[in-house]
Image 1 (cartoon, rainbow, N blue to C red):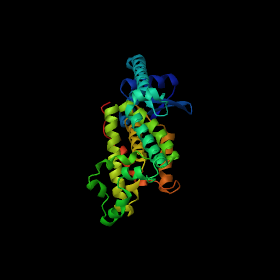
Image 2: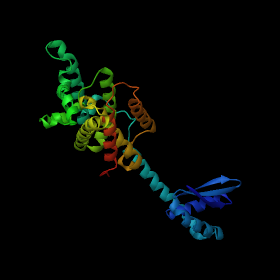
Image 3: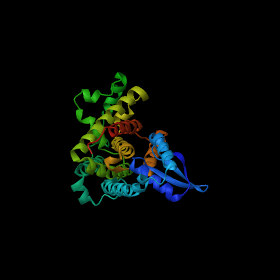
Image 4: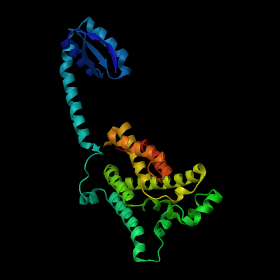
Length: 312
């Protein structure tokens, strides 16, 4: 916003602001030291606005300025109606999503994946109590990017894809389902329910499912590769949880909310601050054993996806 000059009276300043609006220039007047300063919103219009101000000051009673007020009021009314319609179409990501029945109807992919995560985590924890022969990590070992027995080979060969190359292609996706404890599953499912439900309703279930699968595969592959080639260990080949996809959804919503508001998603600044604070605390080691490369790669993938123009 730039200042272009001043006008002596409130009435004349308002008339000039109205005239500028009819010329496609948004402006406002601000009282200061007995005068009314004119401010221009878009700096690309500075030269034109200054020229119009000089013409106005030389002949403020010209009929074109008197006629501008009515047209300006009509323009403002149309813009107000458009803003009202946009507000109706925007999904505030702080909003309540309704009960489970509504979510099942309006966000079936979100609910299905949520129940798979809960079910897989419960089975992995409680099944050994009923079947004593099962090892404690039996299901996790079958779902991670590589089983525990293959981690030494992955390190020796510098190859994060030892299990995938052996034909176990389900591992590209399945690490997102198991979780490591009650707090882990509770926090992730709360965030999944919040982000996923709104994004699925905005994108549609088909597009949303494709994005989730893409985030899962990219995040798992990139995190496993970073673990071997950057960190120098195989820890994230055995990582579990849907956090990477969650950070991907967050990154997507963040970009759309900031750079494409017509997409219809509003992500409050406090939500951004909370997620980035959590991201930083995890990397600094305050949260315990966390798959930081999974978070980072998921976030990067979501941000990239967010910059892809939507069809909205």
